[in-house]
Length: 89
Image (cartoon, rainbow, N blue to C red):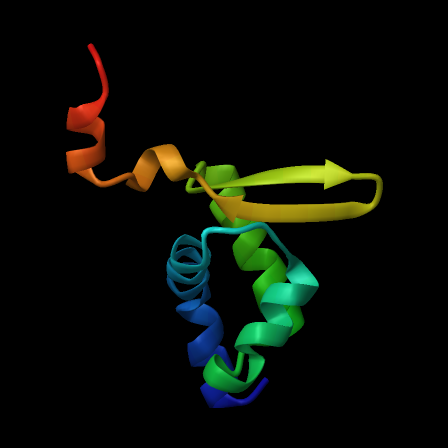
């Protein structure tokens, strides 16, 4: 693994969390890898590992459909406070 790719892999969880929150839609690991490969130089193994780590930490959600896993941002954890204030108590 090259030095640049190793550095990118170390920051992968933060990059992926930000990406999933900004996009606000479900993605497979392959989709995330394809979308971020050029921009951040992440390898597929680093993407899969980071997504599984974020799912275990509860920062993102994971759904399994057969052999396919879909990842998406946990909207409850990052909703704007103004939206939460509008909800009836």
